[in-house]
Image (cartoon, rainbow, N blue to C red; front, side):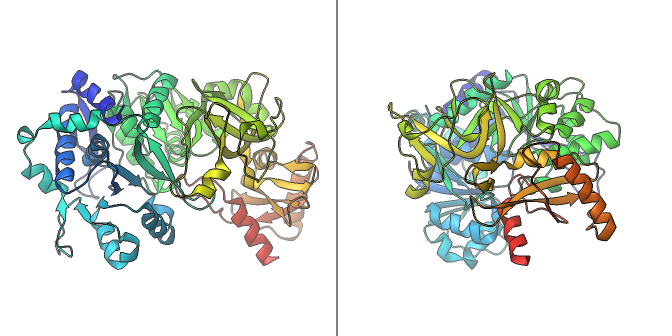
Length: 561
């Protein structure tokens, strides 16, 4: 079923209800506690989607065409994306914060026919025409004052010049009904935080499964109110009939969000469900604790994209009188896979995590299969070729379910390395993560496969397990395990980010490292780590600003050795 029909079913039930709200200030000098609001109902959002769908068809877009979408979160973003879904045009989403070289490379690889985006992206296409050579249809978000393109529509004029009552919406809905579960719906590029950015092929069936699974996981209904720090998440909640708030933040830079603004958005609009990178909610939690504030309306704080510290769960317990935190596990290629609440973490797994057992990421979600297999860097063609690990034995995590994507776009070699087929023709995705299953069937995370440190052919150290021990020191903010030298013969080392950002010398350094060694000696997996390096900051992933690039740290250390 076309994912647009899920949204349309909510329009039929809740047409007059507000679908989207965007808080804004007319001037940056306006007080933060005096926001104004623009909103749109489900009926109007549907009407705009149909208008856009009609306009895009008139511009020559048909089922199977690809369309780059570079639109900031707005009332039009969801309407544009739903309109493309409705007629089978495939939106391509690329994180603009991945760096210009990666961005242009992904645009070139996408082979998109159309570009719907901010004027800055259209101007970028003038500067780098080779990457945009396939673009024949252009739509801007606002008119350009100086018009460098002969043929370009804009969203404002489309809405103004195409009356909804003059459109044959039944024709659009008829096209929509012809699109099936297995038809391609979108291409989402990974951020490149753990390798080269890759396009992931999504089908309508995958989006439908994700919507149903998320609704089941959190028991969501149309009475809940969502505020998403990741724009695409609103497409799921709108398809559940929920009102969605567009937060006042730059979603490209979550770690630089203004927590005062987000708190005010929550206070004014009372969302019950807030989601996004831990980098966002850590800033909000710190702001609330500093100013003795609480998030009274919030029942769910959903953080994804990277492991969440026990300390962050503890912070939210102090400011959520009516809710708790959740940390669903997954990746662009397979989401969601498992889930756990902050309450369960603090009551039963936090102490184990702080002793180096890894991060518990919960039980697999409905209709999802998880296995842990012996780690290998080679391709695995068939499930019969795997060596499955028993409970409590670490290995690589693989998953299967209707929400698991089948391939990378135009990258057969990467697909071969990441996918395994079973006897029934089902695809298993290799998450590229290490972990284990405990005796209760819960999944634990130990780090990326590429970040493992092999000191001997039979001894492997896992980043999350080792770093947890050194993070116990009162002066340490965070640490990163790296392996110096060649695999199977690596020397483990810990890179330290101190809370005070100091690089200690002489007696001070000796005393500090003596304390770290004393901590390490208490645990079998850290007792042989004795090399320490210091950093003023860690290289982090672009999308969530929280995943540490340990391979880059290793390169920097070995380069300067």
